[in-house]
Length: 309
Picture 1 (cartoon, rainbow, N blue to C red):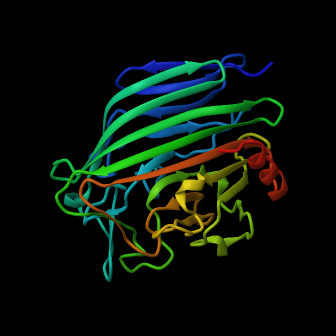
Picture 2: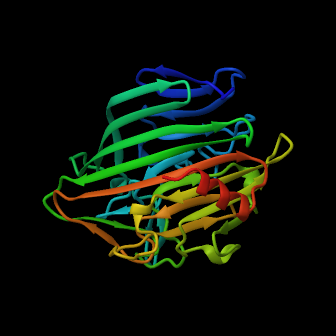
């Protein structure tokens, strides 16, 4: 028998999805606003494996604005919708409060809970520190493919951001502003403290050198603190994201660290800025597979083949 999903919605706060039979909370999607300097925005935390081990961190002491899995924009037309200090070339990271913006929850257009799939569709707005409307986002998160045999489950995160300014909305990163190998922006995962020094690999490469590379997927596998065992997270681009760059003017590159902390982002603007013209929409779709155990490249390749987009 397939596991049954149970959903609870605490209005104005969060949506929680659990395994009904064993009571394991797989995730909470928190959409209430938090501290202004942390660039308030919705996030997923905690994320847990099928067996209940936590695979996200929340407000770690090194970066209080790192919160589970969230959509971010570290450099956006001079503003910081990532949170915390802003990178300024030649000066480093500075606490520039007047550059820290926010992403605000407007409404859920859909919250659909089925025994084997949960879907919620959300409308959000993006704002600079001064508060005017810069962008409207439509976001869709789906929890699916919960499988007791492989002790795994998956979530798909779809985002469409429309520029509502009269000028281009320019996505950048610390790397586009002068800091090498710091191309973080876009969907961002922060792993728990025990995941430091985890194994990082893609379909064709492994180790620290995958930073800044292109690949249809990237995996992060590590051992838990507190409980025995490992977990593996697989981050995958949808085919339309143009991860290879073929037919696309701005291919994505992976941002990943396993030291001094665990982090992954399919960067929107690693080496080059990404401009979004007034009225235009930027759409991306990602999948995150969360599995108990240490999965290798062959197992991941087989899983992705068996679970096509």
